[in-house]
Length: 405
Image (cartoon, rainbow, N blue to C red; front, side, top):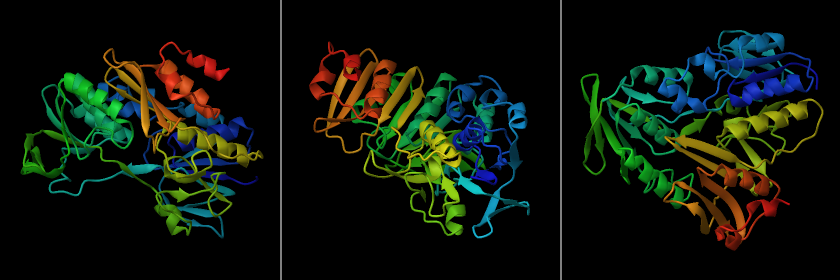
């Protein structure tokens, strides 16, 4: 293609697209629009290593400023305001506009906000971007009492980090188990037990109905079962909402994400969407998917970079994820939606095992705790469309590598 590529969003997807385009020899203008005021940076450490106080903001950056200068990638600190599809122009909040040959939405997602009494007090915090992590890092102190609302990946990662820093931690989750929408009961039960052994109190099947306060100071939370939990700080991790508004206002179809085809192109052939904001068509899984992961973001970006530099490519990658919670590394390969059987391989008591998830005799995905080899096996096997039987998965003497030959 000819003309400028303008990328709205400079997270994992936006950065990778810009870098991959240059790597593929794309010589036209590339601009990354980002309203945060930082160089593009990694998000996963925000709830873990960075929050612990390991290194400064520069340790999070994908590349130093010189990389963008050398590769002629423009970093524009501004907010995308409107798209004129007929004129192929992107208007920015500052009043300027950019012409594009191809526009890419890499707009990501934003925190889902609480709507309960006192939810806007200063001591009610969220954790998704660098400034939020930095503010929490500066605030956390041993002995502080924190209530975490939501027992998903971010909530549990933060809880483990806060506990390791000497805080008193309670986690409140509406579902009947932790990470209920993401992992099997086998993984949930293990994680909950590990968090409990670290001194984290987990409250399941209840919700926070109000933040209690003395003036502007948070004093605790009220739960739906009548329980009161004292707190100095509340951290909210109740999911995200994809940023689809700009695309919708431009007249593009949206649902639970910006709708794209198997090439990650929107209904307008001059506009693509990638990463957390994109709802894409997957032949591998037989439907539409919107995923929130580094793998999904970076692989989407590489796919679009290939298409824009002349290579026809269909995206249908195998999803994989990870979550570091205290000393434990949880890794997932594939999607386990609709599983009806779980085979455990390894030793739960020793804290190193995998859950092989099946629908009938078909392997859907593998969830591993502290068993990186099983995870890598799953990525290779499932990525190639392979499977092993439940009996093979259950047999500790069965050599997994033999299934790859």
